[in-house]
Amino acid sequence: MAISGLTTAPADPGHEINIEAITAQLAKTPDIPELYYQRAVNYRETSQLKEARSDLEKALALDPAFLPAGRELARLDDEAGQRPAGIARLRQLLANPPPAAAFHLPGCWSALADLLLRNGDNEEALAAATKGISLSDTLSIDLLLFRAEAQRRLGRHAERVDDLAAAAGELKSIVLRIAWIEALIDAGRTGEALPEIDHEIESSRFKASWRIRRARTLLAASRSTDANTELDLALAEIETRLRPERPDLSLLCEKALVQALKGHVAEAEAGLAAARERGADAWMTRVLEATLAPRTKHSPPKPPAESPPPP
Image 1 (cartoon, rainbow, N blue to C red):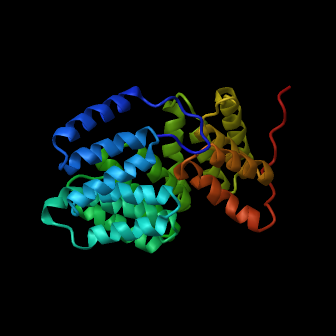
Image 2 (cartoon, rainbow, N blue to C red; image 1 turned 180 degrees about the vertical axis):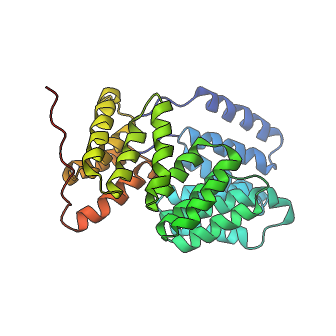
C-alpha cells in the first residue's frame, strides 16, 4: 500500500493478477460478499481506494453482518480523514454481532482500539483492546500492544509491565519483549531494565536502538555522562546505516530521538517532521514525541555533557 509522502516500490503485479481473476469469478457468481472483500484488499494494495471502498460496500450490501468488510471500511474512513465515522461504523458492527461472526470480533475490537488511540480516547481504547483480548482464542500482538499503549497514556505502568511480561513469556515474541522493556523504562524500573538491555546489546548485530534505550534508562538514574556515551555510540552507528537519498524511517526517528535526549530540541523536531512527512508510523515516533513533549512546553533541560572528540 502506498503511503502519503513516502516513495515506495511499484505495486506487486500479483495484486493486479488477483484483481483480474476475482473479477472473472464475480462475472460468474456476483452474489458472494467474500469475493468483493478479496478484490477490495487487492485494490487497496494498489492504492485504488475508490474501487476498494465500492467493493467493501457491495460486500456489506450483500451481507450486512460481514464484519471484515465493515472493519476495512472503517480503516478507509480514517485514512480519508473521517475517523469519527470509522469509529461509529465499528461500534455499530460490534453492537449486536451474529454468533457466526465470532471469529472476526477480535480483529474488529483491535481496529476500534487503534482508531480510538489515534483519536486520543485512551480509556475507551483500553476497554476495546481488553474486550478484544478476552474474545481471542490466541493472544493477538496487535491487541496486546494497543492495550499497552493505552495503559502507558493513562499512567498504568505497573499494570502495563505485568501484562506485557506475561504475554512476552507466553508468545516468545521479540516485539513484545521490546514493549515490555520499554514499559520498564517508562515505569522507572531501571534496575530491572538495564540487565535486559545489556543482554540485547551484547547479542545484537545492530545496537543503536538498544543503546538509546540504555541511555534513557541511565538518564532516569541521573547518570548523564554515561548516557551521553551511549547516545554518541548510537548516533555513530545510525550515521553509518542511514542513506540520505532513501532513509530508513526507523533510523530517521532514532537519530531525532538521540537529538531530543541530548537536549537539541530544534534538530529533534526537524527530524520528527521529516519522518512524518515521509510516512513514519505512529509506533516509530511514539517515544520521540513523548520525549519532546515536556521539552517543547518548557525550557529545555541541560543536555548531558558532550563526550570529548577522539584524539
